[in-house]
Length: 398
Image 1 (tube, rainbow, N blue to C red):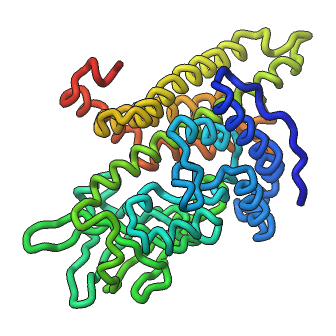
Image 2: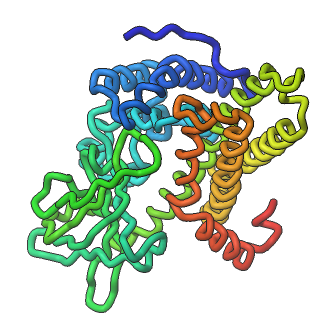
């Protein structure tokens, strides 16, 4: 397959370096990923392996793989702001096609040299990624409700429990498993690296979901899974702190992807409204069409300012707990606004908006989950309320 480059979406005002990075990511999205959306939809999200390898190699060639990881490990060493402008472009494509860009969860940055060499470096080369196994049937988004345990043995640890919604667990080379280390009466939240083929790891369900994405979200059971001491990542008892950093980045990622989705929805819906005629007039001339687009444009502009502030706070080494709250605000606002934008876009397209070949229809299905995973909108509100109480109003809203 060959790639013919076309100009990306019109840039906004960024410094030359960020503008070049945005344009590079935009060309990759427009020329490599967008042309594959229809095929991915028709195939239920699963593309042929040779196509997946093509995406990976194009991403590596465009220097878009492993964005936040150090160059010495095969990443790009991006700041959070650089990561933002790329992820916003990734959000412009449906069917989760950007998932094929080689990357890994930020938890692996806390790995030992051996863990990094075994799992992170190959992942950034596109040779097998990771999956985060934290959610449980009864725990939901409450880390305090996790029942998976790790008991010390002569050779390391024995892990027992069941994890739900393990995104990419069906294709991962390694599972990042949250478990409570049993230490007398204490339960110490700890992350473990467990390979899917280890004895006692069982895939008990791989349910279908509303969206057609490349990877599944299986249910995985761990029964007396024996791992050595080298399986612990980040130290015993440090699981919650590592998870907070993971959640912060994931929630900001959802916000940036949502902003990209709104950008594309507004591009395509506005173009349609300016050319579609009804009653001898463009439908854009009817306020029932144009006002909802104005509302979505305002949402997109406001959400972008908020998400950019969070990225700048990360780069400026701001208080991690305040950054955590701000990321929750960005995730809450954008995930809610992006789904409203998709709903409005479907309405503007009318019957055409209900066709699966229409970008608004696909985004309407895909964006709904952003209000649920990595913490529901209700969880984000709880985090924000706690910030108001503990950090103060001024720090929380400024």
